[in-house]
Image (cartoon, rainbow, N blue to C red; front, side, top):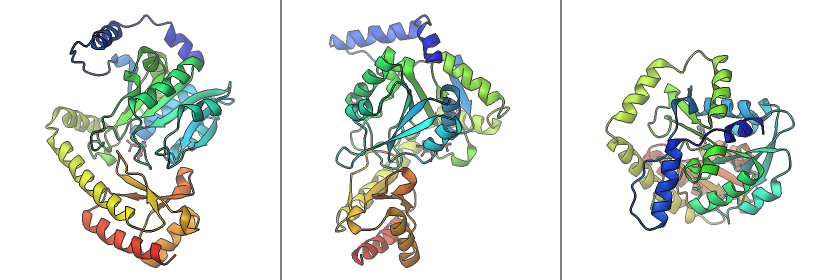
Length: 338
Ligand code: PLP
């Protein structure tokens, strides 16, 4: 891997050696307070949204002949971004039993000498799944051994529920830091959807390549959106906690209602703002189910086929509780007719 080869020749930064020392102290039982991930400005590229950042990252690292592993159900744009880079998307199905998450053995089985990247999205769209630290560590161990990048889309970072803590893959170890391209943005955490601002944090060589690519597709990320993002980051974070609490209430309501409907199942989402419902026992394709639900019950859901999983449909709770209640009444009645 060209870029990773150069990145691995970099002199380890002072910040990382401090991080390593802090980890060693923690392992000895010393109560060390750490503040996250450290990146130099030359490792960060600000783009017009997280979508733009993902696309840039894939274009900068993948090319014809490369394979990119994408666990399904996936966010709709990943496979097409990979295709646009001329590489091949290798879709790995996951199961409800495993919380819609790829396991280390699934990753290993899907790997070939052409594998260039694994795309992970935690918290995930459309499943709401969140990978645990241990699950991520197992994936990193494999990727590090084979020089495979991990594109970690962490756009739903701030929307996690119960006792779940968001873990940034790049924070796990020096190996993880060197192979992870972290994408994040402001559309979900700060509800700045239309303002189009996202960013990539990556090894310097990748960030440099992304910067060159981006310089030919946009002169700069929208200037007032950058000001807005700065204000969002520096401002009072209580509205974010309040928004999360509101989502949490809607999540519990939606999941409880879905759990009571016969012949459909769901895993309780731990993050993002979606519930993925398994409708496979109802005997319809996801597209057929969604079409009929819309025409017969006036309820719009996204068929799982769009996410590479035809067993499911996705419901979003990023809408008012009144609409959620009305929509679920109709959803429940419709399922009972099948
Ligand atoms: N990544 C995931 C998983 C998403 O769900 C979305 C938007 O729905 C994006 C990226 C795009 O984010 P942005 O609006 O910042 O481009």
